Image (cartoon, rainbow, N blue to C red; front, side, top):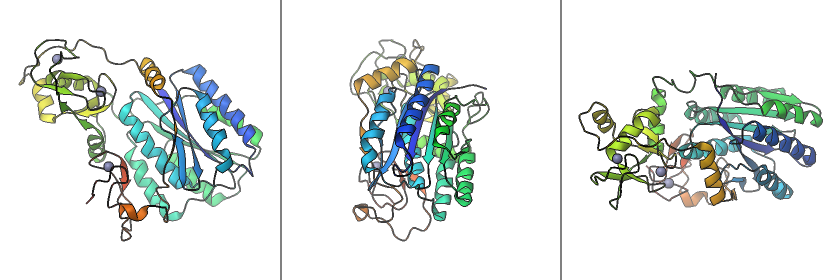
Amino acid sequence: MTTLSEDTLIFNALTPEITDMKIVYTALEDFMKIKRENDSSDRFNVILFQGYGPNYLNDFTLNPENILMALKSLEPTIEPANIASGIFVAITFIIEVYKRISQKAFRLIILTDSGTLKIPEKYIPVLDNLIDMVKNMPFYIDIVRIDTDDPGEDKKLMELATRCYGNVHEINDLRDLESILEVLALKREIPEETFYDKEKKIISKTNQAFYINLADDVLDAPKKETCSICFETDKTDLVQCPECDIIAHRSCLAQWADNSNIGILNVFRCHNCYNLLKLDRDYINKVRYGKIMAQGNIQIEGLDLHEYQQTIESEKTPEIVQAEDPLKETSVGETDFGMDEEVKETKFFLCPNCSKMITNRYKYCPNCGTKLK
Ligand SMILES: [Zn+2]
Ligand SMILES: [Zn+2]
Ligand SMILES: [Zn+2]
């Protein structure tokens, strides 16, 4: 068993008219405090619904103050939450974060009461399909039910939580929330053999294409600089990470890929920014077996997660973003993206241009406008 640094997304699906939010905020403050004391690299985010859809911070934050501020400032305009949409947004967001950070377990904690909207039956297969895509990531869903009496909905939520290695926790008295959250603040023990085999580094066959699509191709380096991996002055075949612009020999990155891949031989993390990168599989094999001579040896150790998180957060304070409800049938702007009314079964894929997760209901990517097949 092992534990990882955790990024926790708190989905506030509570109703201020029903549940006393003051008590909830105190319990959440306590929850985040326990987690921070246990591991200062744990981060947090929050989702809650407004009239047009979900709100959340554009990145996880190390600072619980940011979470409490978002919760309190958005409380006056909070709307009953659509759990299915919230989970959709949470998972697509976590995929975006996974692309940029390593060594993390992701947690989704959903707080519900009797005002929370039920999950329409037709969205269950949609959610199952989505959860399938993240089954190779350490991702956990826990759901807290505060004073609800709806066995049918409990069962649905239980099935969802169980699929993500979590649980449904029912309480009748709001004052018990604090002790439930204290339990949830404990780190998840991750069996070594789950998610991917550490030795063989294999991601399930059906999910490989998804991770390969998520990774960025390296770019040809526009300027001739010293390689950031071997520091040799040879300036041939230099490539660049599209996220942080760091330059390295293609052959040095291929060697780096050998020990930083995510369970797929040619999908690995940038040594300077954790961004998911990919190289040609044959090329990596050729370097590995000496058919292509590497230009140098690895002279670096890679990033320190704690330091790296501090740096990114000090450069950019997280801001609240407003998203469109992805499952809302009559959401504004649908026609702009050419929503396909004929589509019966919602499927997910990544936009080939910007890697944003979208559904097959779109004819144009809502993020970058690329025409989709
Ligand atoms: Zn090099
Ligand atoms: Zn990079
Ligand atoms: Zn796009």
